[in-house]
Image (cartoon, rainbow, N blue to C red; front, side, top):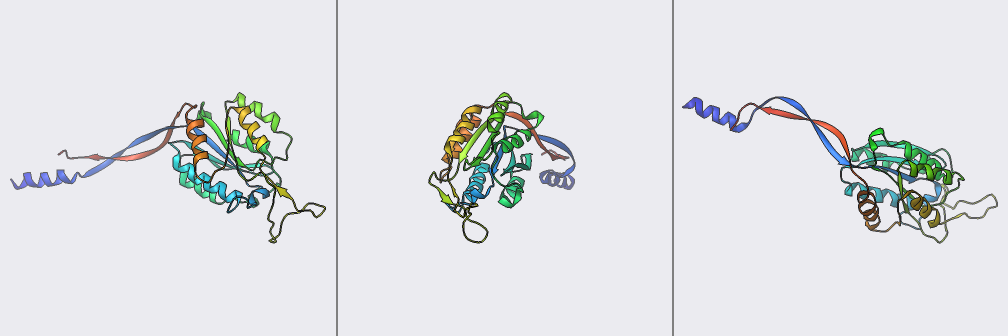
Length: 249
């Protein structure tokens, strides 16, 4: 009788000896986020600054993703892949928080370089679920944009643009506490360029939205744009240990 009681107690404790690996599969789309880190993103027409607001926006985006892989591209005069496609949103946030104009050695703003870098971030298993979210003030100083857009459309990559900033000109802060000036000593003004951002979105089958204080802009792009019109891919995210029970209750 004592032996039976002991066995019963052991069974209730559900001891585990050894384990197997179980693969966790997730469904979602691939999203490459391209963030403008050029000097004009330091403008403070959007508080605390355009760049800081962009970071806040993307933190909010991570909260509404539904098993999607994300990558991060920073761009100014050229583009750099800061974080490859991942399901590890915490790692993505680390790279996001470090975005600053000093990261990109080439000044200016090149949308063509940004979009080319973003398009190369997709992997072979991205399938049809490929979208780029580009958050910028829209000031492009490059001539190569028109040649890039048809290529993106052919590859089935849609670009969703978020315009951040105001259309009234505002000075750009410099490192000395003043404002950036041109070669003639005139203060440089920066303003949101809606026309270019609309062109990018329309040409690739995406959407353009203006940045808002809440997450309405993100919901419109993600829920109504990306998820509503894109088939999810099957992703192998990771493996976990499944312990083997030796006693059944």
